[in-house]
Length: 126
Picture (tube, rainbow, N blue to C red):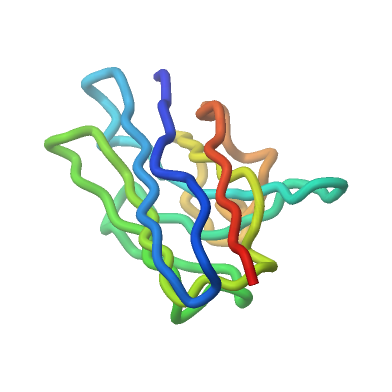
């Protein structure tokens, strides 16, 4: 599976962006998908994930209520709608996919994902 993230850019605080992650391969719907981010000098952190079976979603506390992860299996694409952006949301955002565990705790872990996109930069100005 190859992932291609897009949609990053520069936005003012309070604004919105929608990230997209397009995947190759006909079995993308069988993978759980996640979004992670990495700010300069910091470790990569979990943002949101959507479970492959059932489509339930979960979020990091820092983005809950502002970000929404969704998927379009027909288009082999997963999205991250980001509203009410804050300067602390500035980071490179990565999409990821894996066909393994659907346990929430595992899906929040960087190590659980086998496939990664190249990242897209989101900059939120104050």
